[in-house]
Image (cartoon, rainbow, N blue to C red; front, side, top):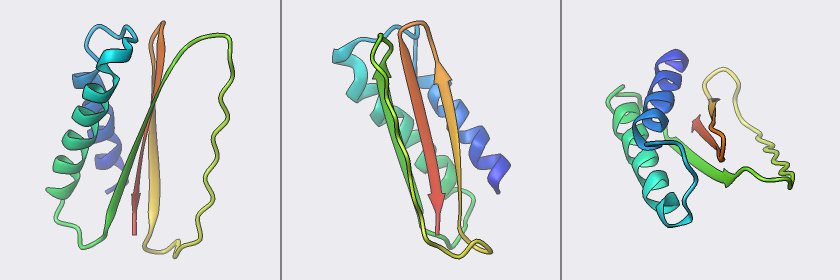
Length: 99
């Protein structure tokens, strides 16, 4: 399941990012498209698990960004995978969690 989810996250970003140029007025649309595509495809896996998908889009500049996640769960049934996409002007991080 993990490999398939990764493929869906990657495809969602690649289909949504367009020319790859960061435009503030397009960020909400890109995020919406990524989340809707990912959730639709992952839901088709017919898993009984709950799915959480997050999407972060940041404009590349000289400022740094640090993100961290801490999760307490059952490692035998729960999981996470992320996909990072970079262009010259932005970074997109999409993560999926299943519980």
